[in-house]
View (cartoon, rainbow over the protein chains, first blue to last red):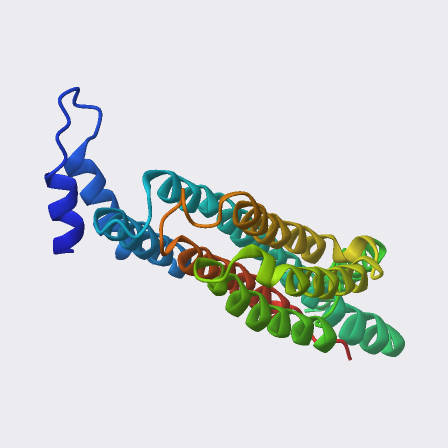
Length: 107
Length: 150
């Protein structure tokens, strides 16, 4: 975390717009989140901030990368929706097989 | 004793009736989702490898040198997209994921065409390629979640 925290701490922010401690807390807690997706996003943001500090991406490039997180979040949301539908489909298929094709033919 | 047996028989009848009602409801409202498709999985893994390696080159290669490859990868993506579209409405979730990936890839190609990495940083596209790979990973994982058709 050192390069990341050094960069955040080193920001000259006279207007107080940047909540440095909150930002660091947010990244640290996201890195320990239960969700693999959230942990990955925290690693992404931290890595991009280090790249910004090293001049490997410009502020415009950094903003563009952060905006890409919206797309990843949308993809993850669809994945969670699919997981729910898959469970319902498994139940419907099981009932078709065991109740309609099985039990109902016996009673 | 006869009374207890009658109660038990009624309980069984109610249970069977509930199961029948549930099964009728579930089969009437078929779950709108496709089954796992090996062709979709292969298209996604192939496209991931090709597009990620390709976008990584944007940091070092001039646009003119990659123009033919852009047309080629766009065609491959379009073919895979049309395959998914052909499965119809139950495949809507995968279609949406293809749309989102296309947004990422198209934005990278547009940035590359307009400015290269001059305004975004010397290692911008290397990182954009990583995000593109993550987008494919989520979509591949989504396909793998799906039930296998019997």
